[in-house]
Structure formats: structure tokens, C-alpha cells
Image 1 (cartoon, rainbow over the protein chains, first blue to last red):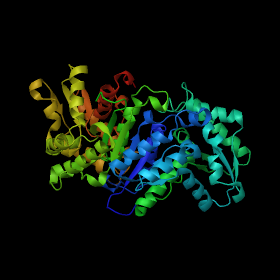
Image 2 (image 1 turned 120 degrees about the vertical axis):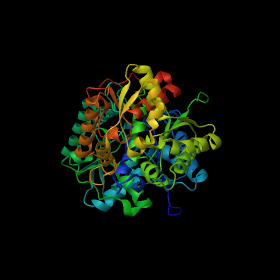
Image 3 (image 1 turned 90 degrees about the horizontal axis):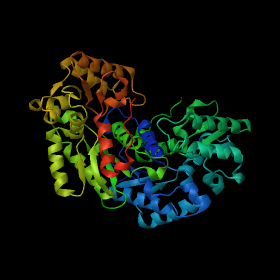
Image 4 (image 1 turned 30 degrees about the horizontal axis):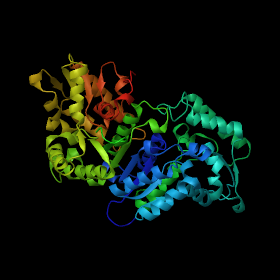
Length: 258
Length: 258
């Protein structure tokens, strides 16, 4: 990512649209800048019509979202992006991310893919090595795929605490419900969605979670990682910071303490 | 813009970065959608390192930002965008937009450019035909270029009310000051910047403005068009709505009344 003076960070958004937008905002918020030209060159492709719902695919089959993710990556690449991230946790499940990554590696070899879940796991291992009981809030697709378990493995000493079935349903509704869920109502998020998430965060803490991962990019649209008495981890913001560190380390702001 | 099933709306951002992001948010906010796939396909190119400050160029010369705007448009075009907007009012000044438009028309003939200032003027003429005394808050570059005067002409009956020199300085500081201005502090905007803008809006109203145009894309990051007793016009949001109407009219939400 070092050649040229203006490498472009690409974000595959649309999964969902507001989450992709928030990812770009994380990049801006974490960049040292007092004028336009101080900011990093970024690009967002938000083409949701190309990408079927990831949880729907994992639970019920149909067209693999990998194809639409690849098309979005190809758009970024044609436009000049040098690295890219998929702004959706569920898309990192092996059944989707595997074929996507393989096709991108073959056809878009110059585009460095940055893995959001790997970044999140690395952060926990490096920054909070004593934190081993970790809560996870995510879509049903992410839970079922056990993709976070691959990055925070039991044989490394991690215990991932996930909501029981009723809690998973509540989080699913907070994300997907057409009347009050975040995908249908992001501006502003409805209190009912926010309250579901807050309750499930504390349920995981009650069960002994030392930190809680907001493992779906819609969740940080409703709650702020800094608003809880326990560490709440936003993989999107961590990954935005990693992209800045890869692209222009001197521009990475100190982490926010809010 | 009618061919294909998924035309892509392109936004030339980075001028400034948060304003470009806000433009995409306007598109999402104004789209009827309850799930990801309902949203329109959009793309944001935010490459501020390519585009010198527009007001700086208009007042002091140097490299014409038209070149960087063109490069951003070319990136959008390569990625598949079918229409594009420049999310900066000052960039619409003829000394910048003229050469940009000419080069884009020649080299990117399939990319439909949508003009934000023309859209704003059309909206006023169609929706508020009795509104002829119009306040304008903008950068010094936009004021000096008199670009809004070309779209809301005196011989059509319009009177554009602009702040006197001290007011223009205040708005300039609200946008550019490195200690409290919007470009340096967008998350959140500093009260000092917001207060300058609120004061200048009411100054224009006191002078008889029937509506006030927020004629710089940074200004709506600080104040909400719906928060005033007079109509406050945000050309960015109007243009986002026009892009939706051009791309998928059935998806255009009713205008917000807040």
C-alpha cells in the first residue's frame, strides 16, 4: 500500500448502507486533520441491490452474497482503491467470505483485503490480553456460522458468550424489524431497537463477559461503544483505525476515550 | 440514466470530506427503504488530496481544483457511476466548474453531471415562486464569484442578500478556523461555529430575507434547515432528492417537515 502518494482506501458498503457510511466516518473521525486536504483518500461503494442479505443466505440459502461483494470490490479496484474492507460482520462468515476472498485474490490481486473480524480479534489479543470471556452480539447468521470462534479460539483460552435464542431473536428484531429495526430506521434509530441492544449487552456482562463485541455493523448505529461501564468493542472503528495505520500511520489520532 | 437495472449515483466528495458523507446520507434518508436492498446504488469518491481549496483558488490563484474534480469524476465513471454531483458549492463557480464540466463532457460523456446550484435555484422558482428576497451564506469564494447570482438573476426579480464583510469573515471562520471551524471539527461541530451561522441567518432575515440558502456544504453540518422560523434551504439535500427522482422516482420519500 506504500507506492504512489495517494493510496485510496475502499469500503464495500451497502451491507447495510448506513453502516458503510459510518465506516467512512470512522476513518475521518480517526484522522488527524484540520483541513480537507489532510484527510485520507477514501471511496465508498454502496450497491445493496447487488448483495443479497447475508443472514438470509446463511440460514436459508439462495444466491451467495459473495458475488455482489466481488462486484463491489471490482468497482473499487477499477476506480483506484488499493485496499478494501467489507463493512459487514456476517459477510465474513466462511461460506461468504471464502469464495469472495478467493475470487478477489485471483481477479483483483492488487487490492489488499482487510479482514474486520481478524482485526477485532488481534486488537483484543494485543490490547486486552487478560480479557478472555467475551460477549458477542451479532446477527443470527454470524452466530450460526461461528465465524468469531475461528478468530477467538477456545484453544487460545477464549470463551465467547452469546445470547440464548430469545436474546438472539431480540437482536435480530433490533436489526431487521421493519417497524422499529435499525435497517429500516437509522435516522434516528428507534428507542425500541436501542433498548433491546442495551439489555442484551448487560445480560452478557451479567454472565461474566469482560468485554462485548458489537459484531454487526448496524449495532454501533444504535449504541456508542463508549457509553457502557464495560469495554464495548466496535470492530468497524478498530478496522478503520487499522486502515489509517496501514495507509498513513502519522495521521492516526489517539483512540477516543469517551 | 434509464438503462440497466442498477444505475449508480456518484458523489464527488472530499470537498470537504464530511460534507461528501452527508450528501450520501441525504440520499439514504430520502429513499423509501425498509431493507438494505431497497436503497439506491451509490458511490462516494472522497479524495481531498487531489483537490485544492476552492476558495483559496478563487481568491489567491494556484492550481485549479477543476483538475482534481475531474480525476474524481473519472474514478466514479470507471467504477460505473452514471450520474455525479460535486458536493461543494464553491466548486460550482464558473472559473472552476466551467473547465471541469468541459473536460468531463469531452472525456466522460456517459456521466451525467447534476448541478447543485441549478437544482437549488429551480427548487426555489418552482416551490416558492413568491420568494424573491433570498439570503445567502457561503464561502468568500462563492460570494466573490457571484455564482448564485447567475442562477437567481436580478432580471428574473431576485434579490440576493449577502452578509456584509464582517459577516462573511464570521462565516469564513465558522468553516475554516482550525480551532473551532467545521472543517477541523465536524464531530461534533463546535458551538462557536454554530452560533456564528445562526446569528448570520437571523441577520439576513432582519434585512428582509424570505428564505436563506446554506450555500456551503459545511454549513448544514452545523445547523439543521428545519430548525428556523424561516425557510432555510440546503442545496445538498435538494440535489440528493433530485438524484433520487432521476434514478428511481418511486423511491423518493415525501420531504421531511421538521
